[in-house]
Amino acid sequence: MQAPPDRRFAADAEAHRRDAPRHCPACGAPPAIATEFWEGTARRFYCSCSACGWTGEITPTGDVAVGHEPEH
Amino acid sequence: MLTAEQNDELTQVDAGTPMGEVLRRYWYPVAFTRELAEFPVKRVELLGEFFALWRSPSGRYGIVPEACPHRKASLAYGVVESNGLRCPYHGWVFDEAGACVDQPAERDDTRFGDRVSAQAGVAEEMGGLVWAYVGPAPAPRLPRFDTYVMEGFRDIGWADLPCNYVQIMENAVDPHHVEWLHGRYFQFIGRHEGFTSPASFAKKHQKVGFTPFEWGIIKRRVLEGASEENDDWKVGHPLVFPYNMRVGGGGVHQMQIRVPINRTTTRFMLYTVHRPDEGYEHVEQPVVPDYRIPVVDADGRHVVNYVEGQDIMAWVTQGAITDRTTEHLGRSDIGVAMLRKMFREQMDRVARGEDPLGTIREEHERIDLPCEKDKFHAGAQFALDFCDMGSTRFSPMLDAIKKIHVSAAERVASGSS
Ligand code: FES
Ligand SMILES: [Fe+2]
Ligand SMILES: [Zn+2]
Image 1: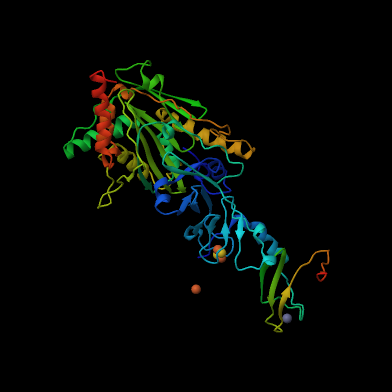
Image 2: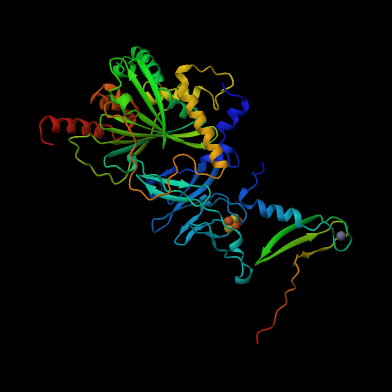
């Protein structure tokens, strides 16, 4: 039996439902599965498509494009 | 009678329900102090939710929801460390404020501990019990009711009962049941089992009264042969909203605690302090002893040859959640009606964002509750009846307790106190 949803993290669950990719970037079919994981402040979706076999990570970035400078 | 909807609302304990939100504004005892001294982490069920409660090596207490925010393994199997409770599965650590302070498998720059707070409650020790508050911050103060902080000789009897806590609370505003359940019924059982039940419990009620006050409802009675000048009326004793009742007399002080573990399980505790008014010589107790009181026998029948066993029989046989749509209250049940009104009013208060009845936010030393000294105008006999005819009969401390009352009486008689 599935445990009841954890009320503490309802907002995270809602954000996942809202933001998980709906289309494969290669063929446009719905991804077979999109697993969200977090890395620092980034949310990443590890997706795979059973229609065309594409596998990859999709990361919403928001408006700001972040680069980096090598140490100098 | 109530409608099914009203009965449903009254008996809820879960988060997000009106009554569940009221109940989350109070502190509850969730462990014996000695339990966490024996093993420093415990799984706790309260108000239909599970928590991990722990005692840090420095003696502070923490409580967090049981499921680890990482992948939901039980923190009740956690490793108690100096900076918090470490999840047994992948080693995340949560401190007493619920903050995730370690994610050992993540690199420094991929950690996200600040986004996965365990959302802790607060926990504190008082009187041999560990108390927890799991409601919205800021937590009110833990009320220091007299029984928990007074000097005296303590023990705690307890049992987990398979019924909703509201019907147990309704018993606390039901004076008439004493002369029947602990009077006539006790005599009936005594005749069959060959003992004499306490005569004072069968005294006839001539008048009952209920007064709302800042901690709940004071219950009063006039028994046959007494008047409004007797303690039973003049002082009375209170239902302490929403889950306690303060009782006592003859040098016995007791809080009857009914913790809503979940909707149909209630932890019933008899927190008792023996302290005769005169002639008491204090006996140190390194730990407060606790003991289970019997509920049913080997055949599954209720154990009804002691006072609280009779109460338990009545509460449990009313049903897991008693059907208030087909009950038939009379004028003598007016206290029950008053209590339901009080529950309803607190739901409204909390919905308006106010503190419910009995919330205390000021620092304080001790809260004295009104309670009869001369119970059932039975004098000192009450303490002895209490020991032999109530749950104390099952206490490992029974002999020590009787000795306290008897030697206090002797000291008074010999004028040495
Ligand atoms: S489930 Fe708790 S650290 Fe992984
Ligand atoms: Fe393994
Ligand atoms: Zn595809």
